[in-house]
Length: 489
Ligand SMILES: *Cc1c(COP(=O)(O)O)cnc(C)c1O
Image 1: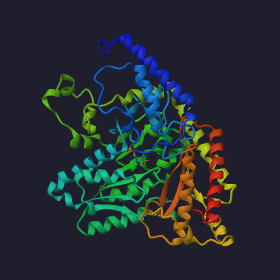
Image 2: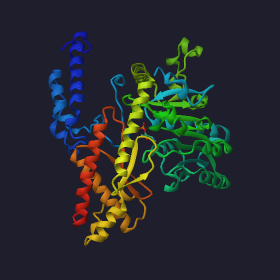
Image 3: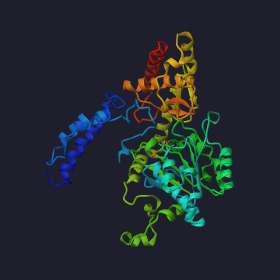
Image 4: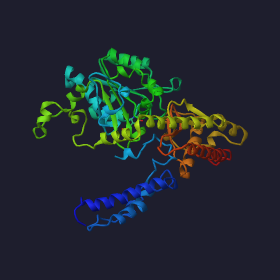
């Protein structure tokens, strides 16, 4: 083997890898959607030590196929309906800055700006640091113990992680409870009462994380009223629209972010639903200077005429990392290759397919939709009445059917035996569906209720896959309810 960047060899190997990937996409439906291997299967298949001698790419790709592929869950499968999509595309395998997005998408005009980062976790961390320092520079760093941050019980866990990293005391991390009556949206009234109690107690509210499209159910927090509350206390509002923010390119979904003008920052993951491969999170900030104050550095070894002249934006001062991937390139390629119109239509078609599935559920009395659908996620379960009916007809009683799925299914709430039973049946249903390998869905627990999440968004998914998914859900519901009826659950 010669030079590791030999152009001829690069051409040959790159062609082979491209063929490998193309074959993979062609055959993707042949693989079980959720990986069927046991954790730890791989080390047993690998040699004990790293190879000393070179091996040809042919052998390496063989091993990838034989050993790595079986361990993958196929996020790009058209039968993938789990978590949220991680939509890939041909162009996305590769935005000249977030500013390349259509201007109507930009939530902030004037001095605002955008930057591409890796993930929402990083974005929340950076904005929280800016919000923290803005306050501490005024009141003194020794007062960090007084700072309070706010989210709801539906806010993504990355907010909690970021709070820990920036040194917010655990006792000052407020989780405001949501419930079904508001479809699990954060209540501005509760937010206000919580904040004013904290202020009364001598604490200092600094940051609220609002979500458009929560991870469990795609609930939407009311941005306008939340920003109004925050404004009264000069707090930073971050809008986490990791998943649903992608729909803002469609005018009919824009209303979900109404009120965003009052926020300080807004982010969405292009790697979720913008046909861009991991990782690519777009952050817009109203006052980039707040980020720069916290994150800028100016070492001699990075100085040049251009940086000194301030003719370029030094994005290292808007985020954690200095060295970074060329994310703008892949986003720009996606926009160039498909144009906004095709991207809109893809998103719309996913929403239509979710509606289709929702329609199927509505025709079958055994199921209920637990939270109203906003985007392309349908949250449903086997309804308590369907389970009840069997319990009354059969010689069943609920307690006999508990198979102890434990905390995972009740989200830490005290549930009655009856509620646990309903959750357990649904938990079993999901496991039965996923073990089949035909489709893959995941779950959430909201207010103690175990829900199955049917998230449409894989780039290859078509209507036929949704029809098939519905058949599979029905078939496994039949089997699960039957097992329950005969006391075999
Ligand atoms: C997926 C998701 C996140 C996490 O995104 P990462 O980019 O993986 O950090 C955060 N918030 C919401 C609402 C999400 O759906």
